Structure formats: structure tokens, C-alpha cells
Image (cartoon, rainbow, N blue to C red; front, side, top):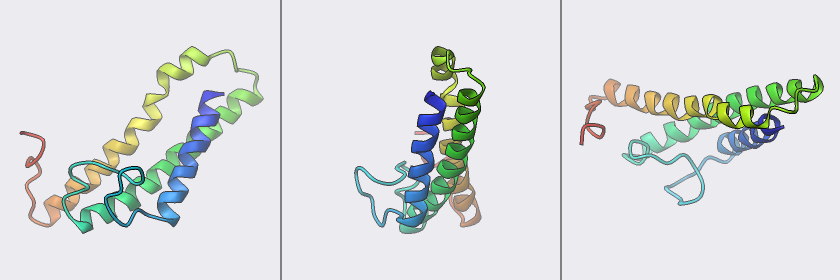
Length: 116
């Protein structure tokens, strides 16, 4: 049930980010990271990219959750909680990778923030 609930929530976040992307560095809305806040271009890329990944991974989690519920595998709360991070972490990793690629393509130093 956790996958179904969290997946639906992440899908909704993804839709919101895609339909109404954050226009600025608002404290409670949008994808936030040091690299995303480097410039307006970084911010826009981060919002668009994270929105797509929130939507895709949220949809995947929703489908897995629905399958678990439909097949009666609802007694795996602890297991779902333990593996919950695996579909969520790629959202952040892939968004940061996209920002890193943008930096490299535009003459930025890929290690400028991570070696401090």
C-alpha cells in the first residue's frame, strides 16, 4: 500500500512540476540543490528534468503498488518501507547528472561544488 500511496503522490508532484514549474528559488516548491540554484538556466533544467522523473518513477511505483494490492501482497509494509528509496533516489541522481552534463556542455567544471 505504501508504494501505491507514495507513487501516486510522486506522480502528482511530477505533474505539478511539469504543468506549473517553479519560476524561482521558492523554499517549499520545486527541485532544490546547489547545482540547480547556479543560474536561471540550471533552475529551469532542474525543474523540467525532475518533473519528468517524478512523474515516471511515481507512475512506476503506483503501478507496482496497484499490482501488490491486486494480488493481495499487502502484508509487506516493512519490505516496502526498506525498498522505497530505490525508486526515489534515481530522480535526484538523474536530475543532478543532467545538470552536470549541462555544465560540461557549457564550459562548467564538473567538480566545482562536489570537491569542497
